[in-house]
Length: 282
Image 1 (cartoon, rainbow, N blue to C red):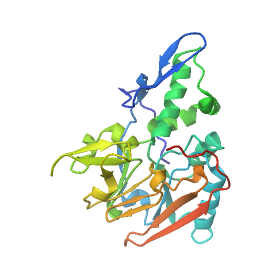
Image 2: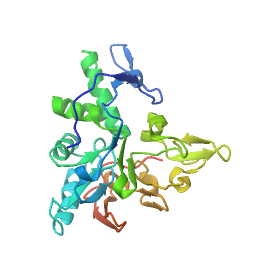
Image 3: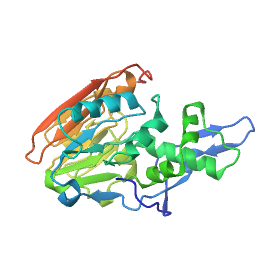
C-alpha cells in the first residue's frame, strides 16, 4: 500500500496566494499554511514490490468513484488482481461526486499513487480546520470534514514521484523540468506545471498556463518514460517519452488507464463518465 508512516517535517506550500475571507472579518492565507513533507518524496519501486505484474496507470479520478470501479472491473475481467498493480497519477479527490468514498476505496486497494495539486489542497484545508477552530472551508471543500485520521495520514504521505526502473518509467502528477534531477525538481512544478518555456539550449522555465511555451511532455528527452495527469484540457497525450492520462472524467469525458508490460507493450482502457460533475473552466 502507498500509505506510509506520517512525517512531521514541514515545508511552506509553493502555491500562488489565495485568501479565504469570513463573515467574522478574519482572513486566513490558506496557501501559506505549512503542510507536511512526506517521509519519502521520491519512491523507487523494484521488482521485489511489483512482482512481475503489469502496471496499470490511472488518470485523475477527482472523486469519480463509480467510473473508477467500472474501469477496474474492465481490467479484472481479463486479469486477476495478482497480475497487475494500480498506479494513480494524482488528484484522487475534489470536484467529483464521491471524494471521501474514492479516497477510502483507493486506500483499500494494493496500489501506489503520487500527490496531485487537489490532494495537496485537500490536506491543506484539513490542516486549516485543525489549526483554526473558527475556520470553515469554502463550499467546494466542505467534503474534507468527512475524512478520518487514516485518510489524512495517507494524503500527508503521498510522494511526488514514483520510479519503476524495470519499466523505465516515472510517475508524476503534473510535470518535470528536463535536465533536473528528481531531488531538485520543484514541488510546485511536479503538481502544477503544464508547459515549459525554453530559455536557451540548457535552461527551461515552467508555466501553469497553456498559453506560455510548449507542452512540457513534448520536450521531455527521456530516456525514462513519464506517466502524468493534471492536463485535462489536452486530454490524452502521447509523446515519445511521456504519456498524459487526464482525460477529464469529472468534466463528463473519460477515465483513462494504461496497462504497461515490462516488454513495453501498452494498452489504453477507458470508461465514459456517467455525468458532467463539473463544467470545465477556461
